[in-house]
Image (cartoon, rainbow, N blue to C red; front, side, top):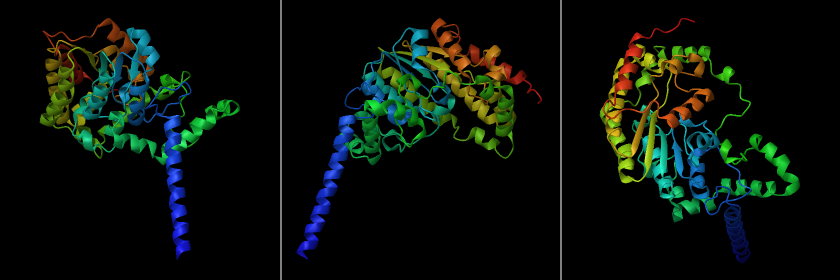
Amino acid sequence: MRGNFTHLARLLLASIVCVLGAAALTYAVDPLQLFRPSRLAFYSDDTRMQNAGLIRSQSFDTAFMGTSLAIHFRQSDIDRALGVHSLKLAMTGSNSRQQAFVLEQAIGRGARRVIWAMDDFIFIDAADIEADPYLSVDLYRGTAKGVASYLFSAAMAKESMFALLRSVPPLRQPLTRAAPFLPVKFALPDVNDIYALPRDFDVARDYNAKKTLAAFAYITNPTRSRFLGEGYNYEAMVRHFERDAVGLIARHPDVTFDVYFPPYSILQFVAMREASPATLKIVTDLTAVIAQRLTQLPNVHLHDFRAIKSVTHDLNNYGDVIHHSPVVDAMVLRWLASGEYRADPKQPTASLEELKAQVEAYRVPQP
């Protein structure tokens, strides 16, 4: 019996040593750069996790936020076009609670300007940020719970071991080339490449009228069209806008917010017109409220790119009814820099009225 207890004690001790060793490895390597910046850092496309490290490790004066419509921008392009030192924090499928929380952390670390691609659907109902299963608030806040979950994560220990191997000079190049094809998250050698499309990306192959029209046909099919309005509730969305957007902006009067409505293709609104007119009314009524409220705030510049007919009616600019090509990304940055489509506080809904007229008049091209 004594021998069994001895073996059990040794096993327990060995387990503790392994766990503590793994935690020490993660702390020393720090793949997320929570504790210190690293010259040999690699980055992950898991933006909800990666953003926690970026906010702590990068120097920046501008935070760039949005959903998948803003995910492919490169920080270097933002910096060059707007004369800023940016940090891209866009998260695919993110909601207003997540975005406001992450922006709050970035402002706390020095962001004096926020560029915010504000989609109407970010204001749908979502889990309370404290209970959000997809975003660890403790990791961002650096609480004991968040730090412990990071240090004692087996996945992070694996990432740390791979990073350690990659730091060995003879292994650096082959492992860096192999990283995108291996089961590791931290595979990007440049922060500028996080969720950015490759420089040699074939734009015409993935963004063209054929794909856009196919997407339109798919979402307006009677068997799927009900999803156009899923989660859209006017009163709830206005409440979320006031809490997450207006609340954040009001708490930081010394921060400049450049908010813009992304240039969806005209087919996004026509799809609602055809298959879910109640949803279209919610969207237009909601964005009217947003425009009226934001243009009255002194630290906000609102830009509306939805009625730029030369772009939004050219279906070759899109991969579906909302996601625009990198060519349009560059246009967005130019428009932000010039202020050409900035909303007039005296006529905050002028571009919305123009959009509504376009939607009413538009006829879908036949394939």
